[in-house]
Length: 402
Image (cartoon, rainbow, N blue to C red; front, side):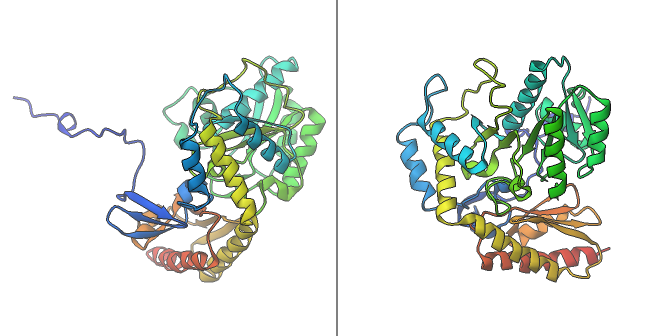
């Protein structure tokens, strides 16, 4: 008699195991703090991966969303949605761009950007348009955004990848100029202003300015993925504003809805006429609930001066981390801007996620060896100091293990 198959007899989860989860179930939150089902409290330095701009249960956001849920949640884009017009106008005012399309996530926003790039190329008579993308980039997990992503680990097993991408290293303008000289099919450059999943790598100011010049000369679209680094996280509304440039296409998501799923593609004059009726669409995108979340998020951010708070508290946190880890062998670099900070170590450090949680702090590790801190923009100076007080000893102890 054959022995039973241990895989076949193992209880199967109802939720597919696509995540390596911590054994923690979060139940409620307030501000920068969350509590699990066992009643334990954690300082949240992850904000749902840069999503919860206003923290948890914000006293101005909650009643607005309750009101909207009781009024109208979804209608579809067959009809005009006044809140879409309101949010689009505000995003255009803040960015200096001219139009917006709303969807449900950063992945969808990036997919729309890639469709705009291809349509822009076809409109110029280019049959097989190509887009310049980057090493260590991350744009999503659909087949197109996965192909634009620069991480072989997340691409493995999903080949063949979508064609039409030319990859270059970040902050190397000569590499882009070389592609420009040899490839007539290029129609756009697509990059994160600050690479998030790739390890908190900022595009330099002079590099962004060089890309803007090159795109203008070639008639390319400059497409800046601000899904993670946008919406005030660096101390400006959008991270590219530190370089005093305007993109042609800017995908947004994450922090725009403070936890309500939302995505947006904001476009400038060169891209505003590329998509017309029937070229793109969405069922849920731009629904009244998501639009209200976006409108209220931007309103509260402005009323509470959260851009200045992100800059000031982020500078304080960076300073505390640099002081606490000064001279610590194994710390390769501490980098970032505002409340988007990465601590790169010289070795994989994924175990620190659980150790930090055990110490009452929520963080993530990305690119295997970069501790990522993207807390809510409402974080106070005292809370930032607590992040450093918990994290610095954990990093030092981890590196001392050898």
